[in-house]
Length: 129
Image (cartoon, rainbow, N blue to C red; front, side, top):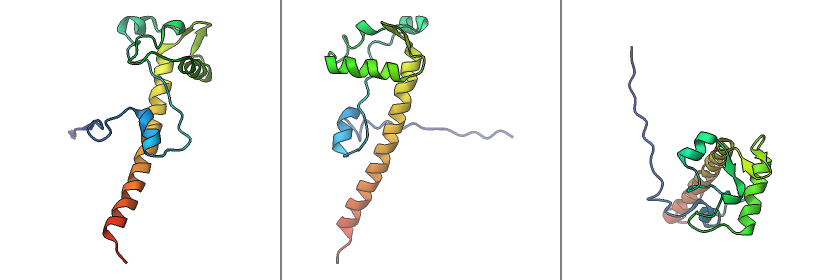
C-alpha cells in the first residue's frame, strides 16, 4: 500500500518582507544574536573544495561587511567545532549547517512570538468589558 502525500513549503516573504535581522527589533525578540551568511560567496566551485577564505568573505554581499561583521563571523567560526581549517580558511559546509540551524531556531522563536502577539492583539480587538 502506497500513501501519497504532498508537502508544501510556504514562502514567508509576502508576510515578512524584511531581513531576519530587522525582525529581531520588529518582534522584540530577546536573546537572539544577528548571524551572518555569505549568500553571494557560496558557489559550486567553492563548495567542491569545501574551503572558504576568511579574507574574501563579505566583500561581494549586498552591503560590504564592517569590521564588526568580520569579528562576528570569526567568532562564529571559532564557536563551531572543526569549522576553522587554519588561520584564514573555514569549512563551508559546517558554517552553512550552523547558519541553517540558527535560522530555524530563530524562525521558531519568531513564530511563537508572532502567535502570542497576534493572540493578544486579536483578543483586545474583540473583547470588551
